[in-house]
Image 1 (spheres, rainbow, N blue to C red):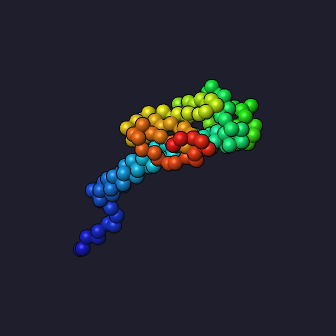
Image 2: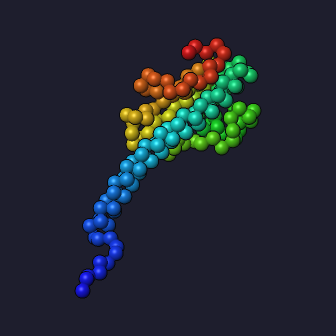
Image 3: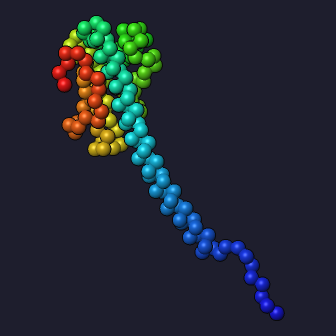
Length: 153
C-alpha cells in the first residue's frame, strides 16, 4: 500500500520564511526611521524659513526689523508679523524634537536658531536663519533664503 504524503509546510520552511520576513522588516524599519528623521529636520528648516520670510516682508514694508526679544514674541498672536499676515497663525514654538526654537530681532537684523536633531547631531546639525541665508554649523547652506534689501549675504 502506497503512503500518502500530507501537503503543507514543514517547520523548517516556516522558520526560513519568518526569518526572511524579519530581515526585510528590519531593513524597512531602519529606512523608515532615516526618512522620518530627515523629514523632521526639513520641517524645522521650513518653519524657521517661514518666520524668516515674514521678517523679510516686514523689512520690505517698514524698512527695519521689528524689535522682538524672543522667538515666542515673533509668532505670538499679537506679533506684528501675525497681525500683518506676514506669517501664519499657530506657527510651532518647538521643533519636531520638542526643543524650543530660539530667536531675536532688532532694527538691522534677526536670528532664528534650531538646535537640530539631538539623536543624530552629527548628521542633522543645529542651524541658524539670518537675513538672506540659512546656515548650518558645517558651513554648508542647505537652502538659500530670500535676501532682504540692503542685507549682506
